[in-house]
Image (cartoon, rainbow, N blue to C red; front, side, top):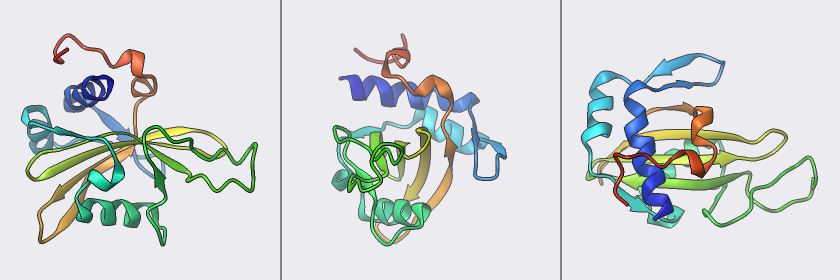
Length: 153
């Protein structure tokens, strides 16, 4: 239930959202994508393996890693300030959801300073394309801020 409310609030928030992309550039979600996300019926994805293979490949490319370095929602994320030898992934899935042709992934990045990120992918069985993403706004960082009246209980 918490994840459903979280994903719903993320989707509802996207139509006025600006994300910080690498290099500090702030980029708003384009209007066409905003409408798709706002009106889309996103089904919850509760684990990384539940995401379409193309989206997992897209995340791996986005992360620039040889493997998909992201833990499940209930796993701990690596904090290199405390444990330089940690084998825990540096990223952790917070919430994800997919429509018939889009996936929205919200994740935490550990390390020296924890940050939260969002990525939107357009996917089909034939091809997957990164559409938009960046550092998520601070209001998404704590699940207690995600309850909105427009989300189903």
